[in-house]
Length: 499
Image (cartoon, rainbow, N blue to C red; front, side):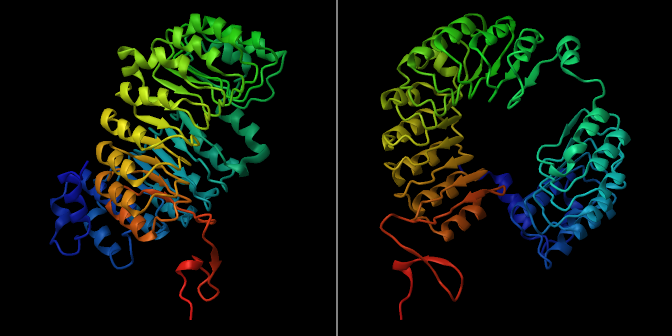
């Protein structure tokens, strides 16, 4: 996996705007958008370089901007972007913590063609920004984790933009008690009866963590679900008795079922559900269901013939042997794209080897906490799973650089979790940097032999901003950390200069 010619050209142009005469005149709009995105990902909006960026890339033709976790994006930058006369269709600003209402007003006040507005993790966004959001085609508003946004602002945006179809308000803590009024404004007359009786075309329903589902309400809800439902999550809902789930048997079109954390799940319940639902299921999540064992999973093997994604995190009794009919069948094994076995401490290594050999379309594979995972498993994955992009090997302490390097060489990795694997060194990080330029995140906390220099090199090599977590508070068990009182840094005692 090497960087494409297109990506190399983009990075070269992005770093040389100051030396190429009238370069913006020759660039297509899409290329300007990509260059701006690259510069934001790599924190190149410095005071010295910003004038070249605004001169060559800020133009009236821009249609999409994506500012992701760049603290160099300020109100002044947004004001300059708004002044260039662009008519944006999509704005994404995520984690740029210095932005305030003033900057958003300057950018949004003339955006009457806006369709998507995503403002995430902007702690200084409050109320005034909402007055500038007026687009007759706005459909999607995402305010996830904007912790200071108040209810009047959301109400104003909703009332001024009647075409909106999606509003995301997760972790907007300042909405407080006003949330009830807000919901009434957004979706008047919506209640359980309206949902169950009138929304006959409903395809997705997420009831996760609805703790007030009681023995009286659960049967009413689950026995009257729309039959066209394709996705249902009951995550964390503590159903009073297992028979309550019988209402799901009529959902013959159900494709995704999330039952994680339900303690009443038994072999009898699965034998009741899966003969009727299993044929259509492509995603099944049983994580945290303490009663799940190999006997219960026989029903999954027998009836879930189209299964693509299986999540069994924290099912500590599962060895996986009863799932072998899925993994040893060439046709069914080719359907598998995602397997999550986090903390399945009893999982058989022989079963994992079969998975690595037969599930050739595997894209996501998590085995965090499985102490018996060795290099041979990763080498088998590297040889047989060319689509593997998301892996978790946290605390798999028998792994070495050799297998991680081979996996990064053969697979298009995007998310990698190697925290707690103390034997890893910079060799693994450099291999990731040279082979996987599209990484999104890397977790190597507790990897005491990995240096910050290698991680900086990795950041420079990746096309997008890569999230790296490298915390080593305890280091290796045989090493000691101490605070340097002159610099305030925590250092390994064996590496400190002693006078």
